[in-house]
Structures are given as structure tokens and as C-alpha cells.
Length: 151
Image (cartoon, rainbow, N blue to C red; front, side, top):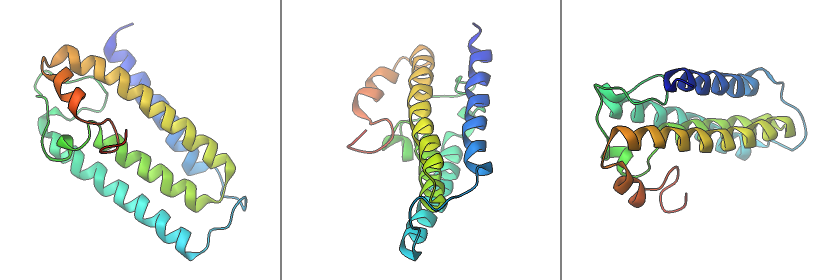
């Protein structure tokens, strides 16, 4: 399959998963006291900020799909010196915040699906990055995927 088409299919699947979190109603499967709402808000807004800062850090390398642009270059500084996929980390923080706030096991299932999805999307994207940038393998060997020092 054409890698550009595959890239757009990844984006479409991402829209479906994130859209599910938005349209599914919250529930009362667990309590959401004020302190839980506060943590959820920090994750949500911190994640949005992380997405924005990471996107700006890519500059001309930013694309709507996980296929590298020919005009781009490998970014290994800023947030990209801390983790390989800070945009995905930010999105996952948003997902965590929405899930925590929702009080819904259904949202929790979707959040786990999102975590698995972004792990697999990142793996596919990394194959594209390794093909496009000769130094990618060395960068990936020394920089965690989503969380510094952990994962």
C-alpha cells in the first residue's frame, strides 16, 4: 500500500478514537472529586500545551500524517531531545485528562485503545523516519518514545 495513503489511514483512525472520547457521555463509574478534576485539567491543558510547543518545534518538518516531508529534517533538540514523540505524549496526556474527568469505564477502554494505537502509530512512523533520516536509529537508541527515562 502507498505510504501516503497509509499515513492518512492512521490519521483517520486517530480521529475516530479521539472523536469517541469527545462524543461518549461521562458516567459515574468512579468518583471525580475536585482534586481528580484538578489533575484531569492539568493533564488536559498541559497536554494541549505540549502538542502546541512540539508542533512549533518541528517547523517545516510538521506534517498532518506520520510520513516525513521531503522539506523537513530530523529534530533532536528541544522537546525532541527529551522524547521522540512529544506530540503523541501531549495527545495521550489530553486523553488521560479527559478519561479521568469522565468517570467512565467506557472512556477508560477507549483511552487504553488510544495508548495502544499511538504506540503502533509511532512504530510505523519510526520506520518512515529511519528510511528518511540516516541518523534516526542512533537518535532512537538514546531517546525514549513517550516518557523520559520510562518509555
